[in-house]
Amino acid sequence: MSTNAMEQLYRREGYRDRHVPHGWRTAFLTIMNEHLEDSSRDADIRILDMMLAHKPKGVSGSEFAYNRAKFSRRRRAFAGQWASMISRGLVHPNDLIDGQNRH
Image (cartoon, rainbow, N blue to C red; front, top):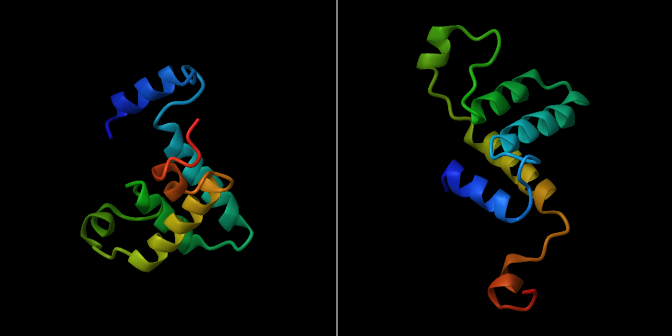
């Protein structure tokens, strides 16, 4: 979905000047870093940065360019945690598809 499409959706739903698509990246990194702060996992913080295509602090340009490690298992775990956090309390998608909770 394009940024413009998301911005139009926000405007239509009354979120103009209250939220922007890029704000989700900020929210993700802030909330997940706070979640990790308790366990002080520096390696995990670097993976979160990588998930947003950021060059982590302390990583040389050549390491960033050549390290092809994907850390897929840990990234999936983070993505699952994030999905659980932002979907807590929402209607189950199957109920929406079946039309049981349409307004």
